[in-house]
Length: 355
Image 1 (cartoon, rainbow, N blue to C red):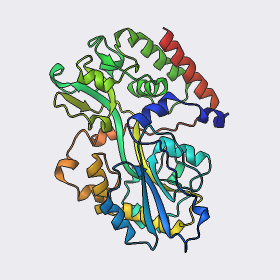
Image 2 (image 1 turned 180 degrees about the vertical axis):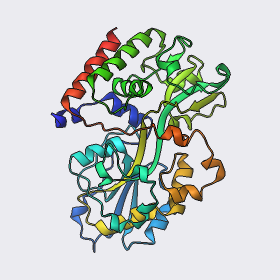
Image 3 (image 1 turned 60 degrees about the vertical axis):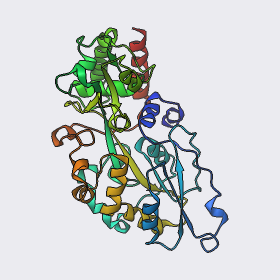
Image 4 (image 1 turned 45 degrees about the horizontal axis):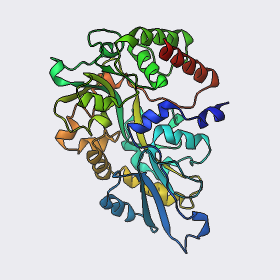
């Protein structure tokens, strides 16, 4: 059942990929057609602008193979096969599917000593249990974007979007039932990964009550509605907010917590360059290289040493880093869960839309 569900086009995956960089279409000659002597090339797939030429040059110094860097954009058709890359950098929700399909190798952490620089709170995850397959390189979170002139202080609670009529008609939510129900669960003080029908039913009732106060349930782009002044509040990731060049728009992390996303590195199970791939990932975690990645992307780093040497303006940017107290309430999530849960969420979302 899980396999069938995973193949479905879920709105939540579309949302998570839309706020970041997950899907890709990379077409390369199969690595298996060449021996390492004939074609000493290590292929890295990464989102556009994730790795600079300078970083690729730094990685190159530690291996004998030449690095072939392939970039991809979000929104393209996923076309990865078993043998067209050695290292892949992608978003958690996409990599989870590859792990489930058996396409990602288990990592040998002894070959990645710089992994010790990763904040211990990232040692486990809902999408990669015990971190056997992925190494986090950057992360971000879903929060609240708002028009500054409408608030005397940042609206740092989900209440104004999910449980109040104070901003009726000026709120844009998500057209993604699963993520929205998970956010409602966080607002109620419950883990977003709960599968308790009682709590999920309470989340459904909350959203039904609030529906009359919502201008848009994800049919339009909440970011554009906010910029155009059609709404005062919208759910966005901080990554998407950083792309808004508008001083009238602010961003805040709700104190109840929310969802966190991660961009991670992994190695293809079909790679013939296992040790060199580990060496390159280790180079990615070198503090200077890691700092370069996140400062360029303006996303948060899970690398403690990279954060230590980062620019002060980056470290103190409150739209990149939630406070430590708030961060404790943020959770990552799995997109591959049991059939009963999926059916329950789908049914409840239909009920919300039809109410």
